[in-house]
Image (cartoon, rainbow, N blue to C red; front, side, top):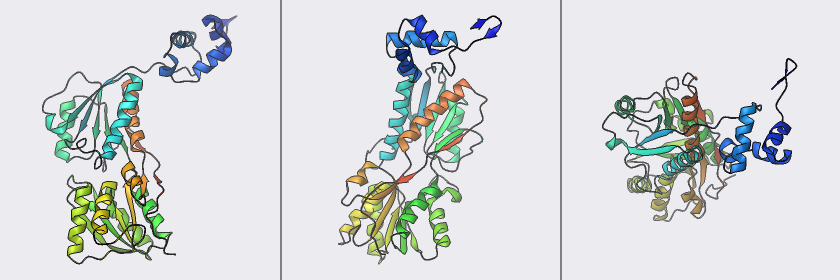
Length: 340
């Protein structure tokens, strides 16, 4: 507003006067996000008046988007083994609902023709370079976010992922600080050409070099990342005379479930005979007895952030690309033996 050649700031009192409500009511509404403000007729009226008057820091209503979510065929086929992907999806859907976005989840096997009419896409997981190139060529949009991808061209597209090295460090720290001095690592086989620097085994070996009092007892490669793969690989390891050291560290929570089952069949129990730590922070390992200590990187929030990044890019296509990490943390549990 302008008076006597000077620009005056719009206040809550101005908005209250025009909307016919109290200052306290206006303040209560404007403390919320745009979608929450317009949830009621009065809130919508206050929101529109505030925007029209040019109230400071007033956010415009984000426009809805039409987004495609590309995923692997088995990502949503089994809830225990794929809890991580279901959590990503939960975050995606929750954020999309708040923006009134429309979503289309498409498995890789059905992505067979060029796609028009979308505002952006989220690509979940790791892919071979040839598959990645094909996906990008079919999408026909530059508004793309990679979600949960390791080994990424962060200067080409937005990425939401987790810091592998920090996650591994948290697990190894938890073992070392309770006196565990030898560790066996269990992971799935890499089938998508992830660069060595982003592989978990690289960080595990790097940690044992930094702390030579920790003996690295080797790496079991499983045929997959699920509970069945962990069970079968550990059974084979034991059948071939493999020993269980102070601690077993699994790259995913489902692997931990399978490993635990195979060892319990041999009369060995986590939290008593050996320590067990894992990664993902899935609910499934919280219900084991004792619950498994796992590093969590907030996969639900990762999914929400992917949708937020798409909206930012829709609003500002020239914005520099970002790689977003969420700070990981350890869940509580009784699966680490105190050997001090």
